[in-house]
Image (cartoon, rainbow, N blue to C red; front, side, top):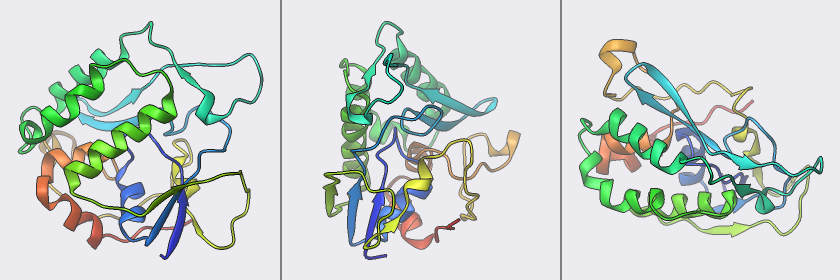
Length: 208
């Protein structure tokens, strides 16, 4: 894939990163409206009781439509503390959690105001952890149909998710609940460490 367009999401799932590592140019969609129940403000991890959704609470405007980049985080809930506790509980026994812990912890300590800005901060930290250098730009207007790029914006949908046939890797609780595919990039990072980028480059994205 030469050029792709994709939504910035909260600790993107593996499918997002498979799409991005194969692309020569990555354009992030930042001019769309915020839609509920998508990966814009949620990510899935593998906890002791199987899949766990980490959801960032947001302040919904009284207007029907609100730009993604204008949506504020609802910080009255101690969501950052809760998310970090969930990550500790899920991954502290994984092979590489301690290796990346110091890079990730500040994301859960400093208050964040806007969901889009926070997602980009998380993305930057993950790219540093993966030692991944991407050619990135941001959209300047919203286009429903894009002709010059491969449209991967469908990956943002949490409810109608496209099944992906990715190779299995060892997960902390796979002996209890089996393998769970296409979780947050954090799951791959904590379990595979420096091999995570090789894994991403070797996978194939299933399109709808």
